[in-house]
Image 1: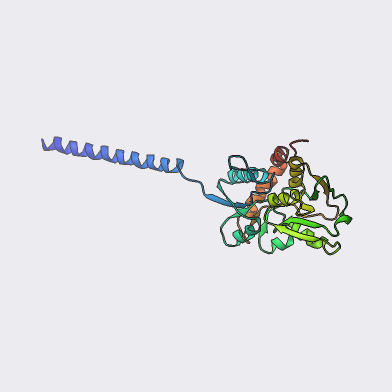
Image 2: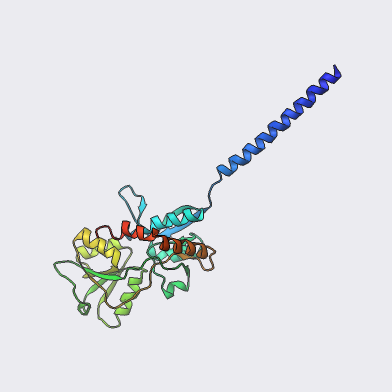
Length: 259
């Protein structure tokens, strides 16, 4: 009888050990399968169509938004986007509020003093927009005009340079939407902005536009906090996307829709 009971105990212990072992294996697999991706926080200013804007449902869309998701996916991150004013984006990098910025941002020398940048992934240039009833056709017509620019942008910097040669009043506004509203309401004479963004407004608002013949601005890049370890892997992804046609596909989708 004792022998029989000892046998039962041994068998029970063995069953328990197997069961526990099974639970540990299952638990490990479950943990791996449900493991959450590390968050990559990106800052943007969603008032710069077609690079970043919101659709009718309030969802963030655009060239930069699509590209950011592809970069995050390629690097194994879950992308989290924070929408804020453009002139606060570099500050958000410096305080660690976001890990990177994609917002049609040109990699100027001034910005490079406060942030690191990826390789350039897009170059647009600048345009002057005006009403068709009062068309602005030549840069020599700048004298005496009110020229609107978006606060904190390369166009604001460019307008300051132009003021050295032309006598006009510069009006800095928070975003491109307000800029166009001011133009339509005739509170400014000319809006000075990125070419790709300007083309969208020309079509949507039936405006007149000319290219700025004076500048060759730096292209757009991804901005990072100084010393960020993300610069190199993001550069590798961008180089891959430039070579394999991914970025060209995004250009066709967002920038060359009507061509």
